[in-house]
Length: 338
Image (cartoon, rainbow, N blue to C red):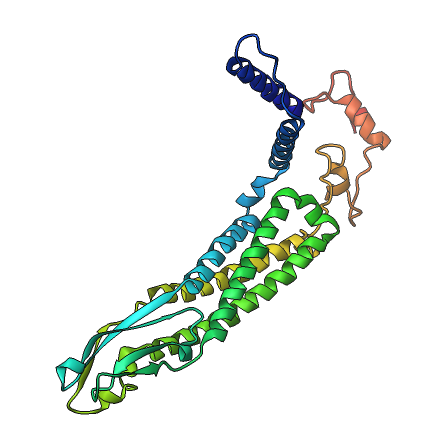
């Protein structure tokens, strides 16, 4: 329906445009098959995108499972971009006894992946106009590249997981395979973030030491002579690399925390989270019908002692000869009463 209506509108617009642009009494213009095919292909792509957006369950991004995955996606980008795009520079000055041989603006540049043993600069010898190359010390590419690799793969997995959460969440939960796979991969990435962040933190410490201008000055032969003076002019800016380490440990916290929410989706803990069945209570007795079953007359029990028999003949006769007040009825003789 959407495809047909869009094609009809586009076709009408093309016809109207061609009608307005062609001169009077000219032959009618019709779109070529290639133009029709390009319009149909564009509309098909739009229709597929609209269907995917309509079928997407974007509310999953509001629950912890999806929201933490979005945070992992963002912080993975920050982690590998701040480390992989770094380039630094520091400056030193070598002042020789002969001022014409001095160099007060020596720039030393270095960048990712921090193979410092391949970075060099030219320093004066203070003996002639010639300069000699001085190489930095250390190769810290392994820890830096490992950290960036984990960040890139974490970004790719987060993108794939978010796509599955939004568009294929029902298939994700089918047969419980999706949550189990997600739990395993999340656990692996949590461990990898721990290892890579710790390794890169140690590598960054070594990079700072190797690029310290005071340490580099000790490697220049001219600076070991007393008549020459060497000093640092500008320190390297390491704030970007410090931020990358911070982002690495933030990713570690996010992936470890996400383990719990993915574990809940597996349903393994469901049998242990069931509430105990309610205890059955005895039915309350009726107010009147069953009162006799629980209450007994304490005087109706079989007790020892004298039990008067009110059905005897003498008692009946006395009751006939006396009134309700206990007085003797008139006409009753003394003998009959006694």
